[in-house]
Amino acid sequence: MRAIAVSEYGATPALTNLPRPEPGPGEILVRMVAAGLNPLDWKIADGMLKDSVDVPFPLILGRDGAGVVDEVGEGVTRLRHGEQVYGVFSHPERGLGSYAEYAIARDDGPVAKMPDGMIYTQAAAVPTASATALALVDEARVDTGQTVLVVGATGGVGQSAVQLASRAGAKVIATARDDMAGTMRLLGADETVDHSRGDLNGQVLAVHSEGIDAVLDMVSDATAAEHIAQLLRPGGTYISTVHSVNPDAMEARELRGVNYEGEPTAALLERLSDLIDAGALRVHLEREVPLAEAADALAANRAGGARGKTVIRI
Ligand SMILES: NC(=O)c1ccc[n+]([C@@H]2O[C@H](COP(=O)([O-])OP(=O)(O)OC[C@H]3O[C@@H](n4cnc5c(N)ncnc54)[C@H](OP(=O)(O)O)[C@@H]3O)[C@@H](O)[C@H]2O)c1
Image 1 (cartoon, rainbow, N blue to C red):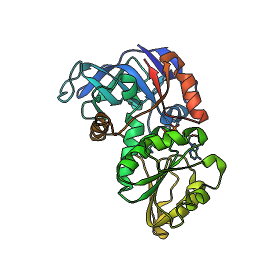
Image 2 (cartoon, helix red, strand yellow):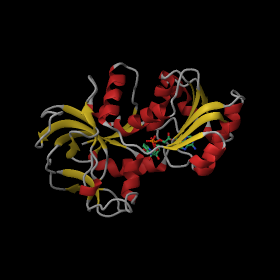
Image 3 (spheres, rainbow, N blue to C red):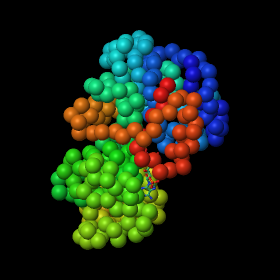
């Protein structure tokens, strides 16, 4: 089968011919139609897992995807042959990922029936980014009347976080350069602040001199996060998806700091399917590329400036 793989950490991802994987007990084999690109994909290609997982090479890249169940292994009870599914198809310890014609998922793992009426390319864009956003909004206990700042709001996780925090009843402030301010408002942001203009805290405090309740941060390093946390009222919550929070230092300031590290689950995907079916969550595709152009798409994502999700057509 055709797949995008790296021959070693740091190598350029290349279109490669590899054996089709066999589903083991409790596993499904999915004929992939589309794969969703996440920053984690190039971070893993760069060696993010090298101290924690023994990875064989070539390593097929990618986590997210959508396709049709082609074979079911022994003991599979939930998903059926021919079903349209989406989710996470990542098994780096076996060299397997979603940028391939066939991928493996566990029947009891992070995979679910595709939302009704959704096409494969849209569904492939959902799992990691939107499940993370849903988990962040849960973890921050976002509620009616709160003010929530989303930092990195224009990216894959951020666009879903803005919609879900707004739906939870919060007043949402989204970071956005000029070109994205209107989109952020359409997604549910009440206000935008432009991080490229500097003095983010000053822009927020100009409207919210009393401070805010929560920060959902997808991009800031530890120094920037420490500074942005000054916006929080006592009892406020700061969640980072890039490990920039020092929970002890936050606690000393009567704040709750969380470094979110989570995997999508079937339960989160099913909640996302319901939200999508109800028209309460939309995922914007910025770019669709054929499998052969996956390496360029990964390089573009690494360079920054994402305006939505990138999807790879298999
Ligand atoms: N811990 C976990 O479980 C978990 C799960 C999912 C994702 N993540 C991580 O979360 C991060 C975000 O993921 P993603 O998929 O949303 O990325 P993405 O789609 O590439 O989007 C990143 C967005 O952040 C914006 N941005 C960059 N610097 C900024 C700044 N200083 N202030 C405000 N916005 C800024 C970018 O726009 P501009 O460049 O135009 O500013 C871009 O729109 C990645 O590092 C990813 O690996 C972690």
